[in-house]
Structure formats: C-alpha cells, structure tokens
Length: 232
Image (cartoon, rainbow, N blue to C red):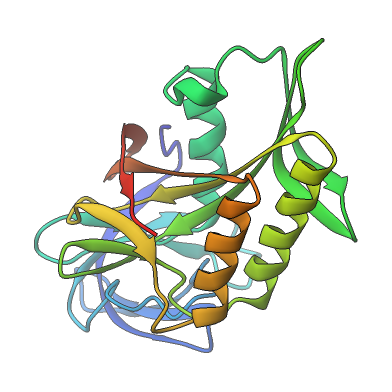
C-alpha cells in the first residue's frame, strides 16, 4: 500500500480532544492536524517524537493535514485507523492471508446483523460466506501487541455479531492488523477492557476465527508482511 499523498516530517507536541494533534514543523511552526484515531493512543506518542503528516492539498478543509504515523525510536507506528481496512483488503487480494484466499468476490462495508456493517465480506459459489471484522492495533507493551487501548462497546458488539454469523452457518473472522514492529505476540488488553477480552474468548469458543497480522510501516509504504501469534 503506497501512501500516494504529499507527506511532511514533523514532531508531535500533543494529542487532545480525540481527533486533534499539534505538531511542530522543521521550521518551528506549530500546526494543528487531524488525528484519525479514536483510541487512547497509549504507547503511540510522547512529546517530541518524530511523526509523518499527510497533506490533503485542500486549503478549504478545516484541518488540511492528517497525522499518519509516529516513531518511538525503534519503529514507525501507523496510527491512522482507516489504513487498517485497506491493508487487510490488499493482503487478502494478494493471498498473504492463506485462510482467506480463493474467494471470487470481496465486498466492503456490507450491512448485516443489527444495524452493523461488516468490514469485508468474502463470497464464493458453493462455499460459506466469510464475514471479516478488522481492527487496527497500535498498543504494544513489553513486546506484546494488545487491543483495545480504550474501552470499546462497539468492538464488543461486533464480536457478538460475528458469533451470530457462525450460528447461521457462515464463517466469521476477527482480524487484527498491527501497524508497528516492536512486539512478539498478540493478546487482548484485559487490564483496559476486561469485557472485550472476555468477548473475544467467547467469540473464539463460538467458532469465530481470531487472526493477527503485522504490517511493515514506513513513510510512503505500508504492507502486511507476517502472521503474529495470538495468545488468549
């Protein structure tokens, strides 16, 4: 996945009000940018960390620039949650996720369940449909990737919807996309949201497949490169 937009280097100063961040440009100017991440962004930034912002080239937009990634001194961290779905779609189409390969149709944002939309729906004649929910993972502590980084009732609802799809005879997959490279395995952040952690384990026991893949993150290019062990 190429980031085919103009990019600028900066240093992050602060993140606030969920969707705002202040960055300092090389010339010393402070610019408020859009932060496309509704989580806490724990372990994703500290004042002074290098960061990359993208330019929408739209001077009429309220916040022309978007925070794309930060660097913790060891690796780039992709904080733009909207990139995770695109990364998942690209990986599936390039057969980088073997258990999701071989389908004829891939559709995105398809309505299902109780007023929900599935991120990816895979279909093939004569085979069960596969409902794939994608989550972006940015939290890493002591070499362990974790999700979520904040309480997520919406995420818990998605797990229940996936379990219902299994009950109806379909396949359902909870796919975590990690956008950093300083961890070893993946687990749920039960200390942050114990209900979500319990929900993942219940969904797994109900037949939902839980997968985790890591994307290599660098300016200009993001690409899914490997599977990550899941420990629940």
